[in-house]
Image (cartoon, rainbow over all chains, first blue to last red; front, top):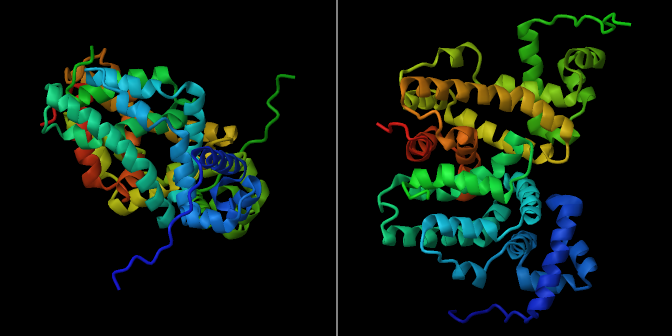
Length: 201
Length: 201
């Protein structure tokens, strides 16, 4: 029995996909993850539940992909290559404006809570959000190593995501305000670059 | 009308206070912040709601103080003074065992979510949890400055809490496992000390 038994996924247009993700994020902000149902998504987007399940498998994957879709990505990220680690990290930060960042911060904190005790969502999150983001940072850091800006054996390399996420997530709790571009840029210059031993100017 | 109109707070013993905080944390883990009621706390601890309100003012303050109470603090923290920044940060980390850290991590993530959109809880959190913790780090860093380990004008100084909190909070999301002492010690050595320009050996 080596034959592939899964039926081929039906295609939906990128426009329709974007519309669906928008609706999922809207519902997520309105009712939160736990109260969000596939029925509500189907009703809001006038699609059938069967289609949703066929296309996304389940709520966890649908939500993770919707969140992923709301972040800058794809081609734009690929194009970032300023010639310095500082330049690349700044450019990555500047891709989200302050309003988007505030929305993402609220969303991520909401989901960070739900992820706890929900292995399915944690896995979907890891696959569709954390991993792609880590891949971007790995590529940026690898170029810095190739240019000689960062030593290959610097122990901070494996913590780049922790540092970035920390600055982003801790901002609200510590400073009672959402993260902004200005805050993240100074955090990169004061913390991330020095930890990596990379030039700050 | 300059007369102080508030009645004097009745005293409760430290043992009774500890008992109450334990019960609040228990309830918090069972039902979460939103569903936790002063009625439930009163019932669980066989105290009157009037006493709870007189002593703590409200749910936000009671919960923040209960969480604070569960962390190592007071005299033990004051006594940490190993003679180096690395030694002090490691000693602070080693005060919580891995099991306590895992519980705290779950609790903090749960509350980080609720704090959003709840200014009263955010304020109580800031006053009873973030501020005391920041005071500890400020004292430790100030001693490092006085010893000449850290330059007074190092821009990473204002981000020490962000870095530490980031390592702690990002661990679950990025690595799908709770923070441990071993993880935090290597994070301190790889990130926090180099960012502050302090000796790592």
